[in-house]
Length: 299
Ligand code: IPD
Image 1: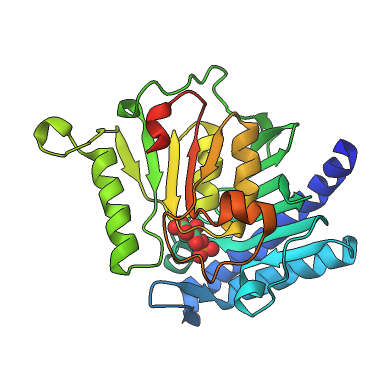
Image 2 (image 1 turned 90 degrees about the vertical axis):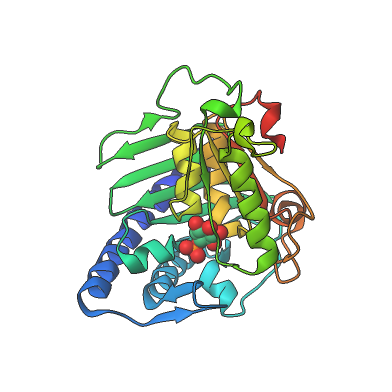
């Protein structure tokens, strides 16, 4: 019920702040002394000891408080724990979203804690401890931003965000991702060209958006769209923990989240997540728009 979710939200926010402390400590340790950075699939797919430590902390606290809840986490998944999605309440967690930023000391990093119930994301908490930005959302109850510990402000911050009439005026987040093989890289770059390019100066299909941003955290992209600072976030290749919390927060702020199938083939190693998987996760193409009403963004 909504009441249960509010209690769970309080717990999740406290947990995010606690995890945020560890992320800050980790960042300091890495900047001062260097740290072991492992390369998962290739030299740009990074994981640090802190990704693992933060996920362990979060998992431990969740299990202690909600022993019946299931858990899906980026690092648990990497370590081979891949239980299928059920109807049970399930936390879906990215302990450090923006690991590359974290390693470089670029402060666009967050923890992303989503809760799925009956295969639908129903609660999201995204916390950036470097900038002390806390985004929360409960399905049906709105989403909020609290800056520097201040009181929560309803999202989007601007009261009258209008649907985009055209891509021309949009500020769009795109990401490079960490699969740099030719096929996905080409597809991404072609989309970047189209979104940014001037059709009158030879870029076929160019939409000449105001600009593109590539800030390195999927969850923060969702949150920033919800806030109204970005109009669109487009990406191929996300994982469930990258999008789960952000979906709730963006949707509750009036955004639209879509995913489509068969765009990008690397789904064979993606986890099996039932409805969520079919409708959103196997698509591996995410589009979150600030408001409904722009059929142009379908491409
Ligand atoms: C990644 C970041 C990145 C996005 C990737 C994600 P990670 O998450 O969100 O911006 O392009 O798709 O996997 O590896 O930093 O947790």
